[in-house]
Image (cartoon, rainbow, N blue to C red):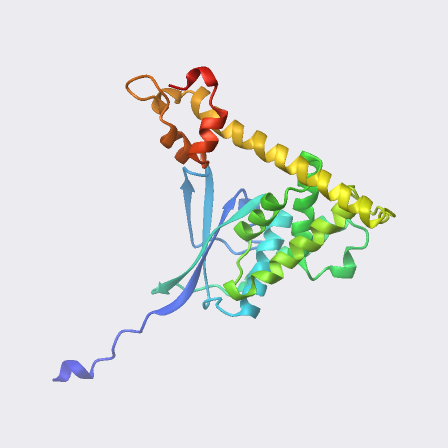
Length: 266
């Protein structure tokens, strides 16, 4: 019975495994703490750095705080949230998010290089991060494709299911700002167009989006049948395996049939 008097081992505590992927090693030891673990991702062809954070971020305020840190990361360097999950801790000292506060000055410096009046909303780093990405999309495509913009936001920031509206609202406000200014970047005065003209502009924008989505989808299908692994999509009888092409290209069977060259259909 004396064995029962021994001190029981410490119960495991729940913490958060926070992983960022990208080239951020130059920040270690100064702006951010050294990672507690790292590995190479063959899928993304880059390093993934891991920290165990003190506690689990399951409340609205905690999620907002963590999103703020992620935004500072992305404004400062080219990186992406890799994963975020609750874990059971043992024999590892978790890190407090305050240890990442060094990113704030770097993020502010980056923003001030681009926007003279950034001080007016300097605390909303998620907003500024979304704004920077929106401008990248405009430079790339001449406009913002809503699905691309919204999907990127939710891939890079963490939101509770009940509070997704906050992130959606930020995306919508930024989207409408540039749409009303004919996708001009910079401090351009709001358009003096009438409601009819604005609706016409938005219809034109919708047509451009539809055209680009169609081109992107066609490219996905053709990449399967013209790449070095095209032979993997052929059946023994020489016809295309439409189901496999649809699955690997992320499209549907009707879409694949639409974009396959007519002479290749059997």
